[in-house]
Image (cartoon, rainbow, N blue to C red):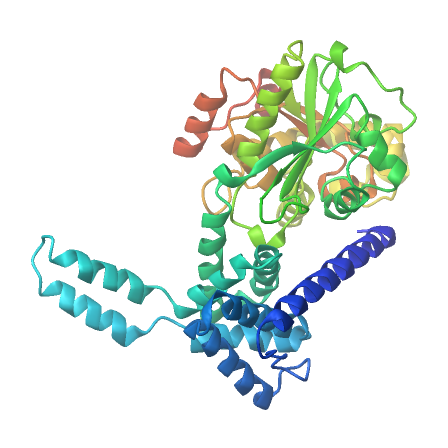
Length: 476
């Protein structure tokens, strides 16, 4: 992310935190007998942790009615927001360690259930077992749902927790509790799809700049270009987070399949008539909320957007992406280190040997290490054939640990029913594009009549739908 984007991000987060603290301070002070903030040090030392533990237990007891319960939850949230990274980790460990499932209660419920034969008499015991299996912290976290910005607070809390939970059994269990809780709240049926235009509030447009994860938005002019008449931007929103996009997609309305993201995002290019377009190119999909990782919206987003565009612009017949291959160079570099000689076919070796003397003795890794190689026609032409062939292999035949496509973007689109349609040579010549994928991009085609069959074949058998042009690269 650039310095300008970091500045945007800091400003957005500062305003969000300020608004949240102010709103929750008002809720806390509105309760009879202001509760105050339980912590005094941002690192949450032991004495403060003990007071916080009491505060958490009082939240679970829920004495004093709804107003007091909301005030306690708001005050607990303010306590968390006042902590630094060390203090927040200690806060989360309190939740994970002190409010875990009561193992003895579960064992007792299981034993009682085992004594009763199947029938109506078991139902109360089954409910008791379900209740015992739910950690008390889930009830505590659920209280934030009733607060303004409370859902956003939990989403951000999980975003922080995920970085701490890796390899930690207790924190992983807390993370799973939060994920399940948020999964229920963020069911696709609750989400609203909105088109975002240049007329949207400045705060929302600012968030698009911050959250764009594929092709950095460099300026307000760049953003305005992406929201022109021949462009579309759609996002999912949740009613409890109405000003926060969950995921958004950027679409270009063009004639023919696009093969270069630089040309697609050229600010100097004229704005075209969307009514004359025959192709919709999905060129960027960005998840906005780290804390919602593992809760998928992207497949629903693409299908909903296709339905909207088909209704608005019936002359559009082709729906495709212009996608990066973020894992290609990492995979290729590893392959080249392990087997630098056998990775090239004889004809590909001869093409490299035909380069000028200062280049002819270099291998493929050394050639790709030359800064600006993509701007040298002879060098770019010599490495084009092997890179295109290896990219086709990587996309369609390299599998991850789950037996599906190794490349995460490929897995996303293939699971949604797309076809690997066309490789685009030097489709992204930005520094990021060269570093991640040697400048290559890929078009995934969403042919509406084939989506379900492609999805079933990939999900069931791991079979990848590919075009004849990509198949020809593989045969080489």
